Image 1: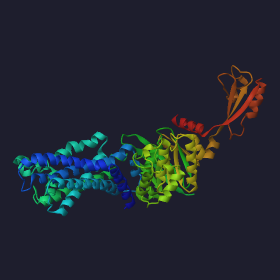
Image 2: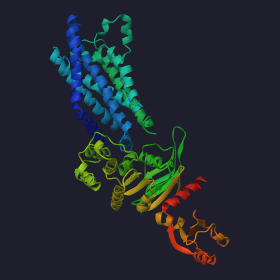
Image 3: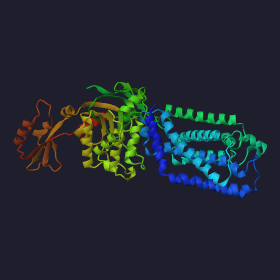
Image 4: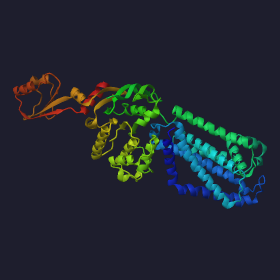
Length: 253
Length: 309
């Protein structure tokens, strides 16, 4: 293992984050506050509690997931796309590193950033609603796994993307709908029966459900299935990235 | 001296079907400076990219210090530094952080004193904490060199290092290259500037159409291929070359005021004495006589033209 290389990539990537710390901090706090004002206070005050959880609190796990998923993808995809775009990827390709070290460096940094943002949003949520996290360890584990797996997905998107439009295509066309339809703002049981079945094909449902279980002890699907789903998703992403580096797809001519 | 880099019958076909290297072979000695000369599209950069692991080779073998570049990629790549042709740098980062990143990426522990020394050698030390985007083109190119040297490589590839660099800086860079050679670094350089190869290389390899046409000691190459010319300025211009002088294959200047005679320095008889006698016999009076030797550039152009023919 080339630990120096992992540390070098990680530090270099985190430096980008710290350069724009204010933006990184302000934007999630602002958007979360808006969600709480609109959904939690304005609309939420007229909504019943869901599974015994006040609506304002009910949406917290979904809101965190929404931001963490999109942030992970955009951080990780940009992190590897930028060197491709400006040409500095040559250094990575000619360095004594293997794919695992590159992935740990880039994905680790991207996941750290989104974990930070997730925690900032959680902190902001405390300003608006009463929260009592029932399974804090499970909550942190779910948060971490989500940061990690979606950063892996972002890394793949960054390698695949040939231009900036494509870089935004997958997050906009695929991830945002999946997250919105994944039960961020409602319980699956609130949907008509047919749509409940359709929803089970949305992987994000399992993440949000598991994450919400960690908060309130209630879930749409069993916690074991949630864990299995996110584990499987992480493995699939890792496998794909291994293949990318083995074949040089989109990175090595 | 031992062979540090060996390229054996390397072929590279790109996905589109373009064959950039058609069985190139080359042995590079430890501690030498070798210049790869070739026109645009000859395969210089492809060869370097293949050795450094940026593109994969289609067939053939490359070893560095006896180690296969694919099987022992960690050891091999840790020995190699690459200065790419295009300036590619993270614009928002500072010079020193960019250089630190390179050192770490190649698996070396921190050594600020060494990095400072590199920056000083390349006259970059006072720009250490400047952002890369604030530097001039020549400065950026030196940052690329600093990055390539950050992990103390044994073999350094310079892909057109002085493109777009002013004369003074170019001389500076030549000095740096000489200094590195003094430290035992093997240097492989591609260039368009033949004077550059002439000034700093020990050996010259000419590459064209994906093949290495020749590899030769610079001095030997220039002696072997070198032609000398005598330019004779006439007191009175002539309309045409007198028939008596036809065997010498002279060239007449457009204004008729000068004649050029080309001869081979290595030939047994250069024909100079005969020519001068015959000129006099033909009644031509000389105003001035100059000799000039062909440069590496002329040799190179001849070689590539022959190859194309």
